[in-house]
Length: 177
Image 1 (cartoon, helix red, strand yellow):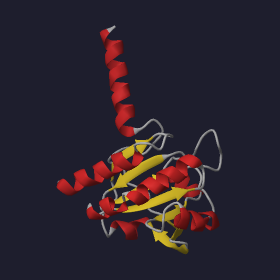
Image 2 (cartoon, helix red, strand yellow; image 1 turned 30 degrees about the vertical axis):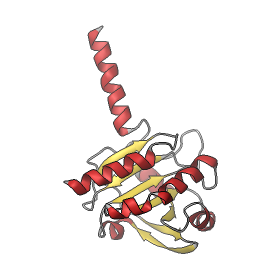
Image 3 (cartoon, helix red, strand yellow; image 1 turned 90 degrees about the vertical axis):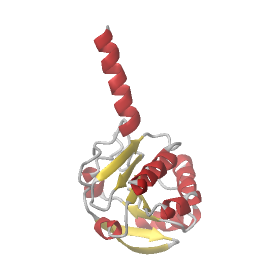
Image 4 (cartoon, rainbow, N blue to C red; image 1 turned 180 degrees about the vertical axis):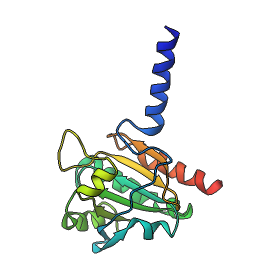
């Protein structure tokens, strides 16, 4: 009975800290990518390795632009963007939406404060964030990626509550090291 409780406790601890859905573990090398994105309604090319030269990156995947949870999460990231910048981090939202949809989302829900980019099939596969029950969408997973390209924190849960707070805490903890 003790061994069953220990296994359950360890499983719960791992799920709580790493997320239930994310396949990339802390310490893994984040796959580099180049894709199209939008910031404040203007399109541009986003390359992860270029962003990492400026400091840590919070790469957060969300299922679909303009859905209630995704809009709320984007607004929360926008509200805290100065805290992320103060900690030296760049925030990039990622979804499988076409760039045209993300142009409007970057202005309306992100308030022009951070970039959102289109995650094509190779990016979705590389980060293992395909939403199993809804093909063509990503699950809600936030990664904190250190400038060396290694993942330092993962939060994966479909409820958006907690993603911003936990990723900000992880970025701030990196700065203190």
